Image (tube, rainbow, N blue to C red; front, side):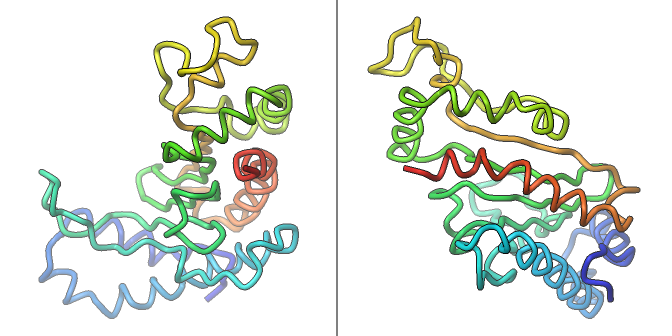
Length: 223
């Protein structure tokens, strides 16, 4: 299979899984899943290999350490469906386990126009968030320059994330970068329709999005 293309079999399997989200159906279709899982792993690896050319920290990163399991953690959820109906992978130094330590690139494949390329920092833990705010306090103009860049805005629109209602402790309410300091997450998202996901340009769109997102991730990671 082409490792720069999402195979139609992947989309078809995920569509069927949404209708038959139970262990019996999954086991009967296990061979199909194993095939598309390997295909998806190859696709993610090709992205890692491409972007690691400009991000040495990602050199040698293996796709399998970035891809999330398809089994859902239902221990504390009211939703008891067993399987995720999408494929998710977080490309970040050290693999997905480091998602609470570093900003990276999240690739989500979900039929029904739910696919996306996203990234940044989602609800960073207190020490990391404090470091980000410290950097914004000292160099907020650099972050504004990144997110106001036309290419960045065309790709992602505005940076998203939950915000505090008031200034964080230690910062004045009239701080010149108060809107950025209030943020509890620093996220960008590019939604991608199904017709693009199954086209060759999907790979190119992801690579382009990662390139445009890199300055934001660099800003968030330099602490």
